[in-house]
Image (tube, rainbow, N blue to C red; front, side):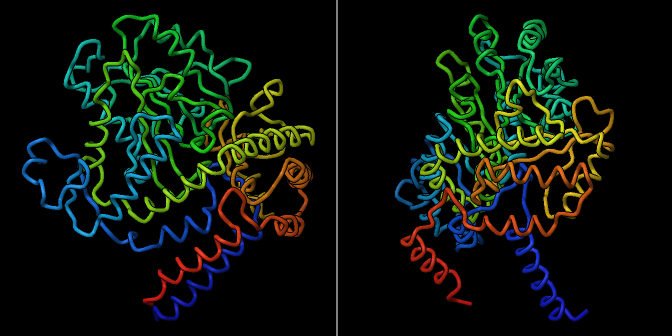
Length: 475
């Protein structure tokens, strides 16, 4: 093979894919987003190829290293040339603590799944030390019991016994019960009854099929009435990290101890993870954050991908500036989209009386029009990118009844309620009538090319020009 010729072909196909996905497609994958130019440029800046291993120094280490330059704040850094990284990491912690309402954050996880694994490791290690009122581990040193959203109930893969949770639990987790008339909402009374009877050590909220808030407040109210029962309440916010707050829900203020998340879905940053911790006044978990930091490094990672960490700070500053406007628009667009699809004759999940969704996600039931996989392929052939989804009453994932979508990326590219109504008409024609609307989709997409909720005024252009020149001047 002539690799130089192949390189030319590779570049050609990459450019074609860039144009197709960014200019010709309507992207409705709920776990994706396009980062801004600022975030992309920061990601490929110099830190992208660097290391900055560090950990919290013990007292004896601080005394031994005083004045050596190896200490930055209370951290021991094992590489030189890391002052800039130290500064951006400290600023990122500050911004993300404010965003999440957290006492502490760990920013070095490189994915949402790693964030979950770090949390599980940390919980197990913390409980293994014993302590008054803390749940006891099983005879094999694992969590005696846990409760989560099952896979059929929309739960995330990493919180399943065959996923990241595998090594940390003794037996199959208890399933959070769902309402019989709306399996996208929790049956709170049944949940409290199960918790009261089984006393699980770990309760994991959060889903990948995520339409309504989780009952963190209701669980916390029950826990406040109990003595000597302090389970770890964890909230996997991977899909909803970018809409946490007043327009959806605020899990740490509602009583969760830990929030984990991916930073590239509704939160419009690079692909990595985050862990937020908030300890209630009466909690025996006052030092759990220390365990989380240790389980991150050296427990789970060495190089924590400094390019994407720098880029995450850029995205976090964007979110700090545009949060309210962005979150309000995402939730409004999702509800308008769901309503419009329903009115076009496509069954929509989540409950009409509840407005179908309170998040960025919209879920269609397409079984009467074809298998979910086939409908997803048909939409892709028309330049509408979605993902097929098994619904709670499906017997198998091999023949899914549903299509799961998210509006966050196209909201950033400028789509409003009425635009999602137009899109619903096109999609209904493709799904119900099996029409080819590819040209219409390309023409429609051409109206939405300018990204919102980011810094794109004239002063920003000069900043990006200078940043670009600093990156490429040595090539």
